Image (cartoon, rainbow, N blue to C red; front, side, top):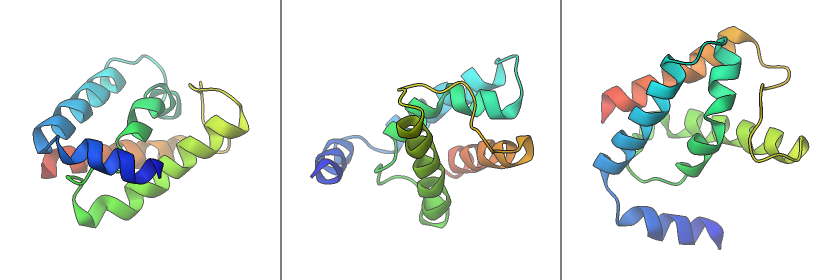
Length: 108
């Protein structure tokens, strides 16, 4: 039910909306003084909100869904809306996820 409501909501917003939101997320991570894991976690709640956006390119959709699943899992496990750091995620994995966001942004 929630998925349908979000898809209906995002249907009204196009690629411009997604590009603007990704731009805000990437800028916030770029100026963040900590390592990649903490940078990614600091914007996790914003990333999770974009899960069902139809403008996400198909070739990145599966990896983006996996990232959002990790964000949602740790948010529920730690019982917080925002998390400080992803437990058990290496900095290199976090950097790859940030690159995924950059690739999606470049593809739009």
